[in-house]
Structures are given as C-alpha cells and as structure tokens.
Length: 56
Image (tube, rainbow, N blue to C red; front, side, top):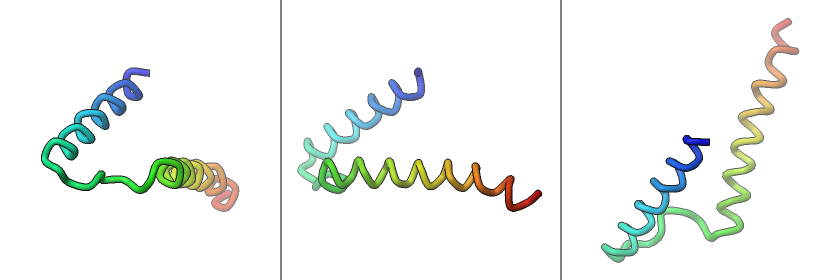
C-alpha cells in the first residue's frame, strides 16, 4: 500500500512540475494511457505465469 501511495505522490509532483514549466504532459491521453499501463502490467504477470510451465 505504501508503494502505491508513493507512486501517486511522485506522479502528482511530476505532473505539477511539468505544468509549472509549461511542458506537455509526459503521458498519453488519460484512458489510453491507463489501458496501456494495465496492458503492460498484465503482460508482465502473464509472462511470469507462463514461463514456469514452459521450463518444466
């Protein structure tokens, strides 16, 4: 839980700093960006779920 809170705080700080110095947001549009992150996470988990079956 602490990691999630720290990740959100870090994201808020980075987003604030990018807006303050007038740079474009360092992420894709909201929903596609979130879906991309979820896809990356699920692919990572899928890899770790499938590899033990292949190696044995």
